[in-house]
Image (cartoon, rainbow, N blue to C red; front, side, top):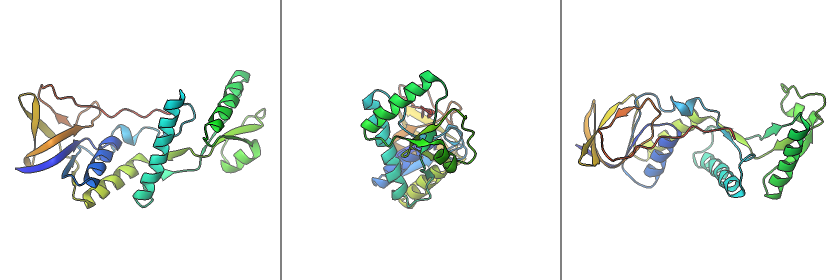
Amino acid sequence: MKHYDVAVIGLGIVGASAAYAAAWAGARVLALDAGTPGGGTSGTSFAWLNSVKKEPDVYHRLNAAGMTAHRELSRELGGEAGYHDGGSLEWAEGDDEERELRERVVRLAGRGYPAEWISRERAAAMEAGLAIPDRVQEVAFFAADAWLDAPRLIGRLLAAAAARGADVRDRTAVTLRARGDRVETLAGDSGEVRAESILVWTRAAACCSAPRTSTRSPRAPTRQRC
């Protein structure tokens, strides 16, 4: 029976990140997905990296730190890892909405977050397909915002984990087997394996079946736009 330090079940963005981090730390890692890595929620959600509407301040700074971490991770993986910068644009048409947006730009700039007003002409030049209403003369520009191609990043994370010795298997469903209140082994088509720690990061249609024990199986949350 093969032995691993960590088994990761479910290779969306959270599972792939966990497998990469564990392999980077020197752990013996087994990474499994019943389908294609990134084929669930991570492959369909809108991965906008931003902190433009994250309140209160402590939550804003947490998200801004996450944005920095994504930039550093992209460099760590050698680029071409699904990270796309370029910023985001926002305007408001109603008076109340414009007032809120102007207050927000001032507040974000005061926190050191790149936030400024640019002309409609500059905004249109940045994104030629925008249909900016005639009454809008200025557009808020948040230069640090980015978006993430999650499936590409997942692929790069798993490739990097494999390069450090991780055993990555897709289209591999498993059953967790417990002794008492502890899950000890994973059984699949290739037989049983043992892992000191088992991380389960699956969507609602789980990639594995687990016996009734006190072991908790966290699920990766769906990312939200704001």
